[in-house]
Image 1 (cartoon, one colour):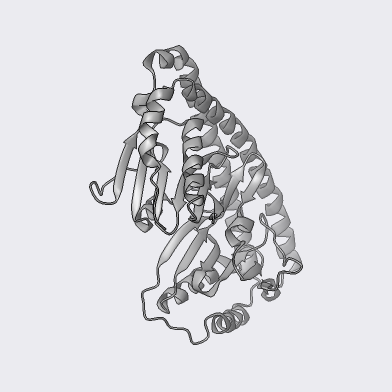
Image 2: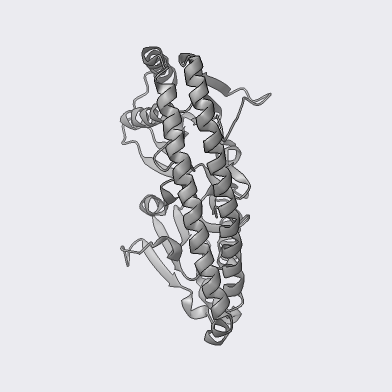
Length: 358
């Protein structure tokens, strides 16, 4: 019986720079394959092949997609045997646990020098463009984040915090009841989505497809959605339950979802830019309305509209730069693929395909 695949984004473009969680995932995994090499589409194909290889053995597999390049994978996590395969070079990830849980495979020697010399100038130009447009994109996202912070200040001034606190305490009682497990609750980390040239994208449907209960938060920016979810994760861990924190793809410090696997439960921000509502026929879908505690004055609404216009414009500019960034990244990978030795590649990758007894 085959397993299945859950999709996440491997990194996100945020107002604080590029965010990834591979170091946290390396701690979570029991065995880590650190794959070192230049950015190539061939590396993504290898990771997909590994993913399918384990799916066919019945394992649940997580694929971590590139923020910009559609259908490009930069890491694979195999649940059950807890193996992580990560194309590490771009993220400055260095193995430390040699001889135990970290195994290193370098693909740099698969590059043919003569072929590299033939594309060297084009590569250099594409890499300069990639760096330029990545920085421009992140600069615009930084501006957007500051505007969003201003937006939050306005809504926070209109909140009934006591009423919200009461609602949150009632939620905790309903979710956890009297559950206390005789173990230490584990915490893991994933990303919800990222900005792409097509706008903000997420993998909520894939992440939550097997969960029985989905609580969808409705509320304005700055009204405590992220704080609520962090608090639920803390409460879960304190009771011995595991919790997975799924981080925001635009603000590196903000949480967009918390999953409590042992309760088959998740709660997530279902407002812009990832609006979700209960699905017809899905009995475990509910709305958690925090917006009822925020009563905006006319003055506040005017301020928010002014901020919203600037915020949307900054995101639009960021998307434009992300498009140019994507084009440069695509060029680099195509050029690198032309320089790979197929024979050396086959020889290097063969030992990775190891059959396991589940």
